[in-house]
Length: 170
Image 1 (cartoon, rainbow, N blue to C red):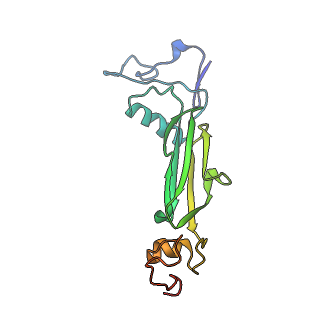
Image 2: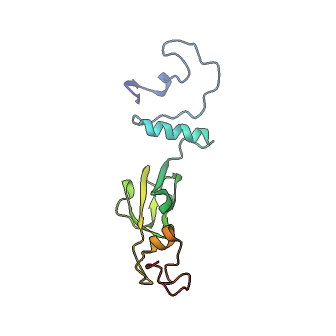
Image 3: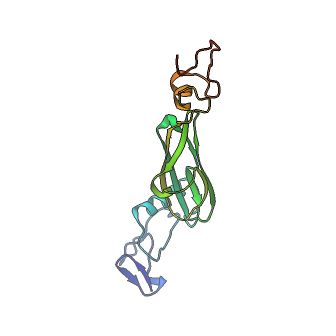
């Protein structure tokens, strides 16, 4: 038997695609990408199937959407957003901009390092959080964030303008 929602068909001969149930009035047109599922699809799955058809791909290609973001936006960039086939290895990367460090992923990738490989087996949404880089490798009293983002001085040179006054004192 084939089940569609609450209707159960004893054989495929009682299944009419493009025809009213008890009539012979057939749909006058083409029907494309017919799928029969063994369960009800979620709204997300229906939207994904629609998107596959819109992209000219077969609905039978199971795919998952990965959505990534960054906060703050000025803190860095992320790569890996896209639509991937089930089982596909997806490199996910959070790259901090100068003056920032990677802090953490939230959402579906909580606990993952800045760069890792995700095997597409579900839709995933995550945001990389970047924080101010508080290191002070030149010991001038200014953090890397302050030197690079705020003052435009060099984080590895305690006296960027060579005036014999440390950047932190200026």
